[in-house]
Image (cartoon, rainbow, N blue to C red; front, side, top):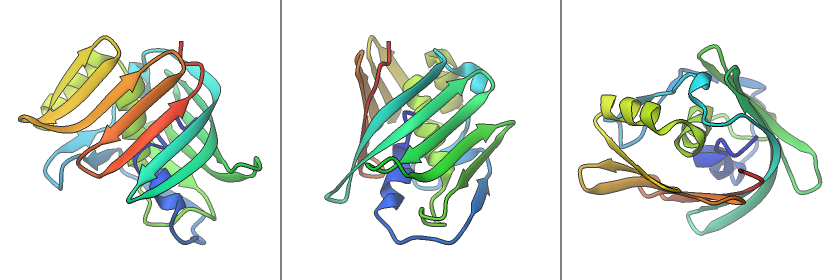
Length: 186
């Protein structure tokens, strides 16, 4: 369930201190560049292909590397992700349904905005035309060729995605992190 991105912050926050917060809900948008590009999360129906699978997630942020497992279920009704440590213990659950993003965890920091994880997931696994329209609405451009995708602000590459049958890699240049997801993405 992390293919949707443990992306962008969940993994980053796993390296931080624990929080006692049980459930955090956030508005369905995130800022992609500073506070100028407000990306409104797409509805779940814009997903390219439904998935219900285990994934391995590798995250690199500020010189730190992190590995975790996730069970990701994503289809036209929503996104549900269960984050697991290497021993299989649940570290948190993320949900994106009915326009609301929520994260339930007693381990992840309260400052973690789960909307960034959902956004990264969408950049990797949602339909290119829907992404292009949403990104243009917030002043960015989107390129999709074969197994590569790029989000740009002018000539500056905000993020890039490379996909293969068993791996998806997202590099967020604006925020300085990288996700590599391993799973059966065919």
